[in-house]
Length: 167
Image 1 (cartoon, rainbow, N blue to C red):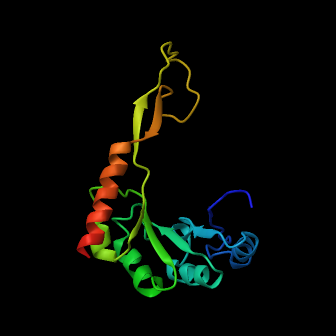
Image 2: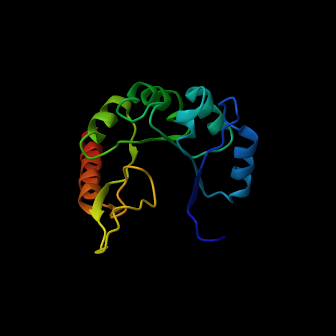
């Protein structure tokens, strides 16, 4: 009703299991729009059980790094999730995904959906710089901003198209 095409969320219980009841409430109240379980699955105590519950409560997409820091490191778990649940739910690989590893992740897991930031750091337009004051995280420059890099996204899309034609 408000113009959103989907919701990306994830709720775990304190024991690391998917909070099935609250996820089901979100599904019921989301008027049939796409529901994506985000990387909460990667923080869960059992990714296979979490994916199974996600299917049962009507989640459309599971975004995962395969229970690892990056999708490349989580290839075995992503493959298992795709093999076990890929006919019931879309498995989307994310975290550290870029144009250089999409083809290998696809080849090793069979997934056809990828999430990437395509980000780059660029200098801000700030001319005056007070180097004695930090407003944010240690080690993060106050004078850098994160932007989406159009070229990275284009290259990643090209690799995805190539994968679709090959496999």
